[in-house]
Image (cartoon, helix red, strand yellow):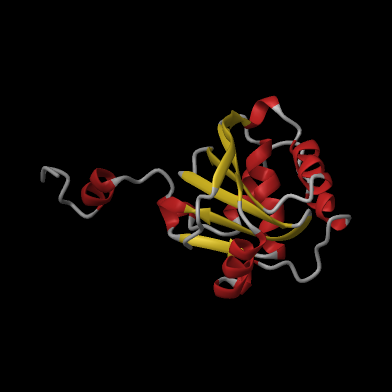
Length: 162
C-alpha cells in the first residue's frame, strides 16, 4: 500500500516510552489529519502498522507482516496496531497530511476504513502486553525464523552460496 510521507511531526520514538492512547487522544483533540506508523520485531519478522486520522477522527487502520507478505485491514487490524505498541521492541512515527491527501488514500484503499470502530470504541482494542497469539492467527508459524539459507538447507541445498 502506498501512502504519502507528508510532514513528519514525530520520528523514531520508542513504543516503550509512551502511552499510545494519549498520543491518539492528543491527535484527535488537535483535529489531526495523517497517520501514526508503528514498526516492531518480536520474533515473527518485522510488523508495520498504521492508524489513520481525518480531521481528528480515527478512520482506519492497516497492519502488515512483512516477512509473510500478509496485511490485515480495517476493524480487524486495530488490535494488531495496539499489539505493536505493547511490544517493547518497536518505534513509531507520526505523519501529517492534508484532508485531501487522506481522502485520496481512502479512495484508493477503502479496505483500511473502519466499519464498526469510532473514536470511542477504538480503545476497546487496546492491548497492554504484546500477545504472540494475536499474530499467530494471521501467519504461517512453520515458516517463522526461516531465512534464505534455512529454506535452502531444508530442501537439501544448504551448501549453495547465496
